Length: 581
Image 1 (tube, helix red, strand yellow):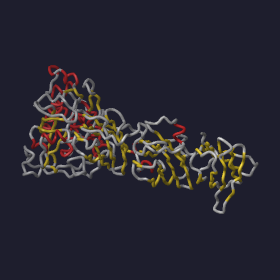
Image 2: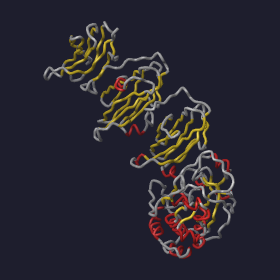
Image 3: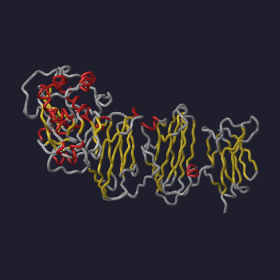
Image 4: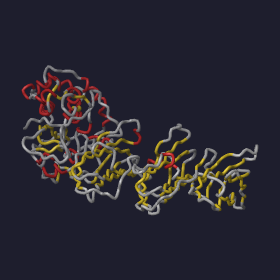
């Protein structure tokens, strides 16, 4: 049966707490009529088998209402009997009547009272897998868990089998080839006319990477797990005990991605590709993860949050990875439900990327904040109907415009970043011009040079706090090396959101020229242009624009000032630089 050592253990401490959002609450079950118990899962010509792949419905292989089992769970977790396995089962069955309840009481007791024998894992001579020894020492490796479970079920009158096989547990890495002795043990039980699978070792807790410390952490996922999900990390020696139709080969098991229990606990249902090793195409690998509800994601490519572009959808996430070197790369994916914002991210998937070429056409700035592009998350932050709708804006002339509808009382500003620019941050910000008309917002971007830029829109709802958070980001890409746009004019604090600048947009004006000014400044008594100590009053047109022409021959700076009419004070709005030769 093998050593049954290498495994991953997951679960929770003795108090069993099953969150309602993790498990689909499936309606109750009907008590089965007693019948002869089959010894093999295909005794009825396949009627006991489950369809593969998973149909995305239930995580369980039979209908269970976990809420109805709460009282029994609490009782079983507190039972403390060590005299004999028979005595233990007798006490557990005092509160368990149906076969499901008997099975559940046994499962909960083992998961809450048997810890993984980390010393025995490293030293076979110091461990015992005999049920009575496991009961009295309260520790064992997986063979001891499975053996005790089988004996307790037998005493309770439930047919149970101890199974052995390969597992994607402790020490597993994508691409691993399984050979030699099997490394894990678990159980199959016959209940309500069908066989079902469970793993009390993985249901009880977790060990650290070196298998030197065990922590109780109950995991509901491995109780009566749907066989099409169980097969992602359990491959039995006898293929019949997959309980699947069709069966998977060992090669398919090795090739398929391992969906961790947390994957389904987070409400995720599928991932594409479903293979653990991905061959990049033209230097890129694309992964899509499907979710039942809005979910947040993180990634790590070779332990860094770089060289990937993540976009969110209502039903999941798309991640495009661009490894910057050929060879093998590790990609880890983490997630958490949006409604559980205060919770930490859970590790849900692991891929191995095989890269034969590097895509040099795309370079993701280190300052790019994920996810990229408009999504339900940017809408939550108050940015609605954002255009462009995609994450990447390609511009050949170095200019682009972003528009969106902002929610009431939303304050925002934008920053521009590039890894290959020596322009100071404050000057880089002046390559973005913000304009608002009511709840409609517009950002004009004039890039200073060719390259890849991160455009970040920081937003704050005034009713929440003074802190601005990145609500929306874009990747800007400009291949045209002749692009060299000047900054927009310097804007001062007196500039209001509903002001509009039509001309001039360039913050650097040509010397010795007549420059046309045109601005819309609602509620202003007078607007002026100042240059070299001279003040030029602008004229208010019938269309509501302040207009005029200014000569740049008499100064190095040109300013726009306003007067509200209350005290004839002049307030600075804008400042331009004049070119020098």
